[in-house]
Length: 106
Image (tube, rainbow, N blue to C red; front, side, top):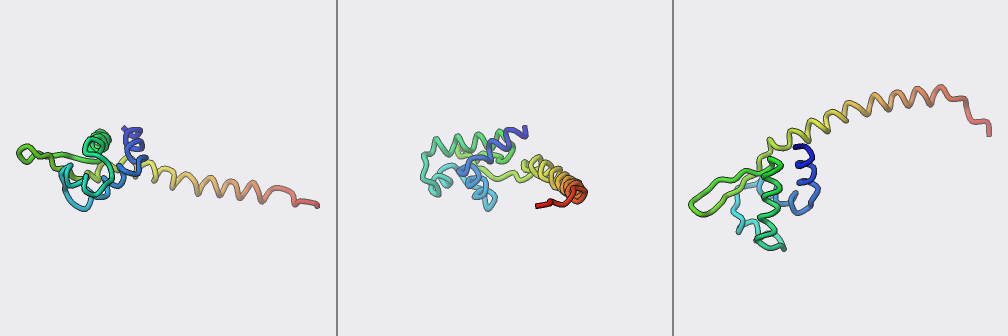
């Protein structure tokens, strides 16, 4: 699932679609108005975002209304938090190693 999330967010158009839907719910036709791509392309982007758990859909008659599902970002937040904790420890170890090196005699 995390791979789907990263793949979905790797595309700048999909990120822009997600950001627009985070502001408010929209139909495909409303989304198309803000982009220089076709309706089928927007539908494909929405399918990718839905597959990654970043967008949900509800029906109003024949129209599909989409909204951002920010809870889908949880895996990304967890991944970033893991590495946020990982790097300071590694940097401190590197500092210790560098301090133990003899001075350069040039």
